[in-house]
Amino acid sequence: MSLAPLPHAPAARAGFVRGFLSVPSAAIALAVFVAMSAAAFLAPWIAPQDPYDLMQVDIMDNLLRPGERAWSGMTHWLGTDGQGRDMLSAMLYGLRISLIVGILSGLIALAIGTLVGLVAAFRGGWVDAVLMRIVDLQLSFPTILVALILLVILGRGVDKIIIALVVVQWAYFARTVRGVALVESARDYVEAARGLRLGSLRILFLHVLPNCLPTMLVVATIQMAQAISLEATLSFLGVGLPPTRPSLGLLIANGFNYLQSGRWWISVLPGVVLLVLIVSVNVLGDRMRDVLNPHLGR
Image (cartoon, rainbow, N blue to C red; front, top):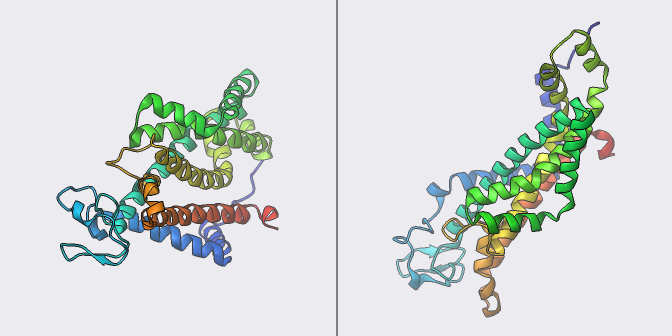
């Protein structure tokens, strides 16, 4: 018994890229996400100042409007906040933290959820029943409530919020991967591998897992956007990141009290950046889903 040959990998990748970029909104979203990620990565080199270095921040320059010049002669193109920090620099550093938290928590949750889903689908029986009841229990609680309770217990910090986001996200991956793995486990190529007496781990990770990757990538993209949004919400509520490592959500919270006095830029500008980031990630996830499953696209 022989399995059907797989398509040539470079040609398949080229076709995927062409199909992905054929929609203008996806191409724009990809360009925006890449540009924002590059700006966040290069923040220490391209930011006008380090907004969290007390030697570079002057309280006398606080609440400057966009385009105003500071006492030192520096022009703050996006204004300053209540502590005199340059808003452009603060947003670049905040964007960096938001991306780090969203990507790391998504990758860890993806790894845990994928392992649980594959084991549940492949082993079946009481193993599947126990693991899925744990997943059902996790999914029955509101995400924001679980994250709030965990952060109250763990405290504030980048590592703490990553742990909280992993706990509230892994069940989504586990449920999705289990559904896909159940379908793949019943296909002919898995039966052929079992007929060749291949080990269970080899079948699971070398045959079933690669065919689950397209669905996993789509879910991971959407969950990353949700993680960024959830982290911003938690930081806005004051239970996420500390003031020394602010993200976009904390920057929005810092300027919330200034809105009524007309200092709109302190909250609005980070909010716009956060909105653009989340929308671009969601558009990429939706387009990836349509390319990988053309029936959904139609």
